[in-house]
Structures are given as C-alpha cells and as structure tokens.
Length: 275
View 1: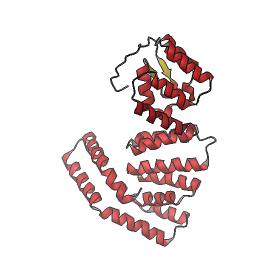
View 2: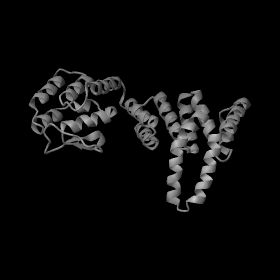
View 3: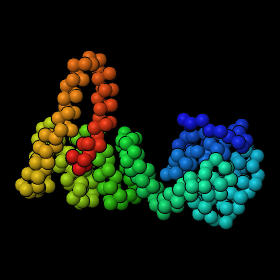
View 4: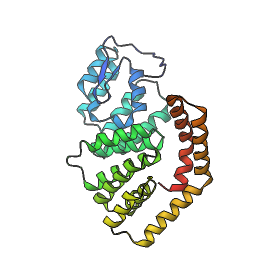
C-alpha cells in the first residue's frame, strides 16, 4: 500500500476485501492504515459480520471480534465502532485515533455524494488536481437525487481545479453549469474570468451577451486580465516557456519541464487571478 507496515498481530492467510477501493488487506495494522489514509471512504458498510469473522478466524483475535460484534448488535454509531477497531490494534497513537474518529463523526451526517465531495475537495486543496477532477466527475455521474445546490458546488470546484491546471475552456464550462444551477456570483465571475483567459474572445463575448453582463463588469474582468498578463509572475512564466522550447527538443522532456514549472507557479497564479 505504499508504506512498510510493521505488524505485531497475526497475518491473514485470506485477505479482507474492501469493495469501495478494491483493496485487499492482510492484517489489522494494514486495515488501520487504510482507515487513516481513507477516512472519507469509511462508511457503515465496514460494520459487518464479515469483518468480525475475519478478525476472529484469520487474525485469531476473538476478543476484538466479540467487541465489534457487540457494537454492531447494540447499534453503535460508525465513529464509535471505528474507535473500538482502531484502539484494538495499537498501530495508531491516541491523537491519530481521535483525529480520525472526529472526522468520521463529522462525515456521518452527510449523504454519500456530500461525503465524496469533501474527499474531492481535500484532493484539490492538497494539489492533486487531476484526481480531484476524476472524483468530481464520478460524483456527477451518479447525480440522481442530488440537489441542484450540491451539483452547483461540485461544478464550481471542478471549474477551479481546471483553472488551476490552465484548462480555461473546461473551467469556464464547469463554472457556467455551476452558475445555472446555483446562481452564485462567484460562479459567474469564474466563468467570465476563465473565458477571458482563453486565446480568443468569442466565448467571453457570447457569455457576456447571454447572461446580460454589464459593461462595467466586462471592464473589470478585462482590467483584471491585463493586470494578470502584465504581472511579474506571468511574464516570468512566459519567458521560461520560451527558453524551454529552445533547450528541449524532445516533446516528452519539454512537457515534463513545463509541468514542473507549473507546479510551482500555480500558487502565484491563484493569488493573482483569484480563482
């Protein structure tokens, strides 16, 4: 799972299969590690007879198995069940357990789509933009019964992730969907700003006319674009791209260097653009 885990407990001959993420785990420590790394994926599905049987039969921990079975029979909430599970291992510190359990408790009141959105938002905040976009798309593909308000929030954040990757057309389209669903001014601003950052004015002018944007707002957006284009951050970025084109004739190496520069440039871009 990407990290060497020291296991003090029995190793299972037959793994526990975690369906949500298609993972097999072979020890109690590995299960605790999985929960620590993926608290957003922990749902009441984990409170199962199969888990209790696996802990008893494969890990030979009858005491913990009985505790968890009792917790299920008594109808304990998910976060208390997870507390018993993590505490019965000894892999995590008390503080780590408390932090994980508090997060899971906060997530318990959310719908499945809301919980997945929180996870996708966290991916975006941590800079894992492509993963965040895939997560947003996955949620939206299951939009049956989802409120317009939640869809608007997801489309807005999806637009922001695309904007941070400099895919301004996709960003503008996502912001437009967010605005049509939620009617929030920040989505309208993102839609216009992203369109204005494209290489031609066709989409920006179309949107300005379609949504009856005033001349004052149009001027403000274009003034912001001029400020962004003339900023030292942008100018330096453009110059670096020109130098890279001369230094790297191989397309693959050239793109690798661009992505390296973008990864450091994105924070400056966020500050200047406001997206």
